[in-house]
Length: 254
Ligand SMILES: [Zn+2]
Ligand SMILES: [Zn+2]
Image 1 (cartoon, rainbow, N blue to C red):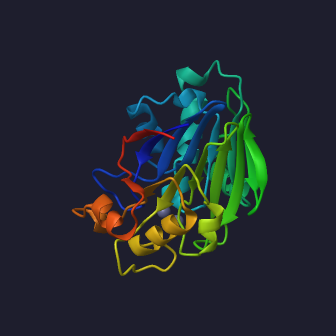
Image 2 (cartoon, rainbow, N blue to C red):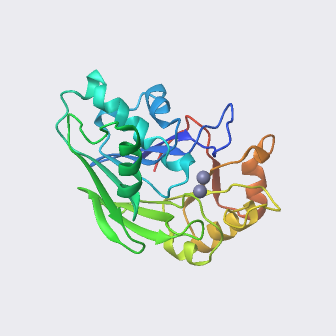
Image 3 (cartoon, rainbow, N blue to C red):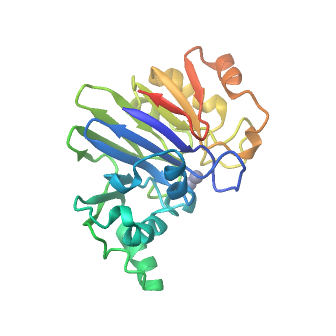
């Protein structure tokens, strides 16, 4: 798997960190992990083949994670690159994803589902196990963030695994869900003294890193409070494994 960080930030406008989105190349297809409002242009900027995107994972309905979906469908409806496309695009999300997209679509009569290619919306529950596409299996976990928010564990046929928390508060159970993952892509909204319980701060993220015995950790969803802090050095004080600071445009092989 190859991961390209499109957005390492949050809902707050920031010059170097756009809203959450991660492009994943796998042997069986391409997947976008969350689709913040900046995602459609960030895909183009990073040279990702957005017109061939196979699937979108929507972790929850906060607009920094979901706000790019309708604009993307508005774009693919008219883009020259997608007029000859026949393979489907699948949007995976929590229960309620279809209703939310349909209401938005109807509110503006956008015809977002009248595309040159089929668009499917598949809603998944916590603790679901399914094939995202051929050769990529997925498991979900309900996170303490919103009532619908989900973490996902992706495993390729060769056993390589990526766990993406998206937004979450602290729970020990998340470490079990992420056990021995090749990459644990974790939110770490705040450095310390977090103002919101339903996010993580560094000490909690590193506790989860240690408990999970993940091979590598990447910290993302970084609020502007992190500006000027050496995240990787601060992480090393708390955990001796490899921690990577997510930055827009960063690419890593998993
Ligand atoms: Zn968020
Ligand atoms: Zn959120």
